[in-house]
Length: 186
Image (cartoon, rainbow, N blue to C red):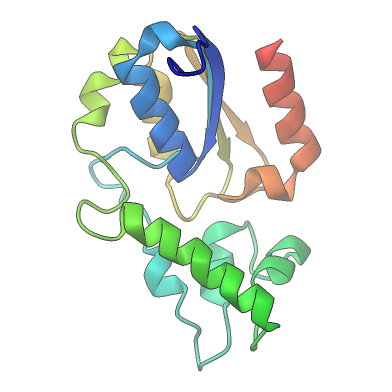
């Protein structure tokens, strides 16, 4: 931001992007006007471990991704989930994209600690920007208690839960998620 001579920004992040957004906001609160975290990883919450997406990404019986879909969506049989993670072998381009997505995630979250920075929880009080925390009602990847912790530890933060969604709330109910974000950023 300094190189671009941008003094303040609105920052929105989902999952690992939410973790990175929270880290930036905690380290440089003066640079963030408003912050939105959607199903953000990044916290260690006692008794509420983040799901093992890498284990679930291994197809059952060699070609079934039901467990991965169940982790990321409200239902393994939901149309969006089936479209993004279909059973069987997909087209080469789709398989490469899936591999790249998991490879990127593994670079950040695979080695311990798993998808969190233990000290982030204790730095959330530094965030000064108004913050909207959005969570899927049935997030089976990053438990809702993580969203509650973000909302409790960040001053001027509010948690909004989108009913009938899992970890991919912005994919499952895009209009509702977009409306929440755009109204908050106005």
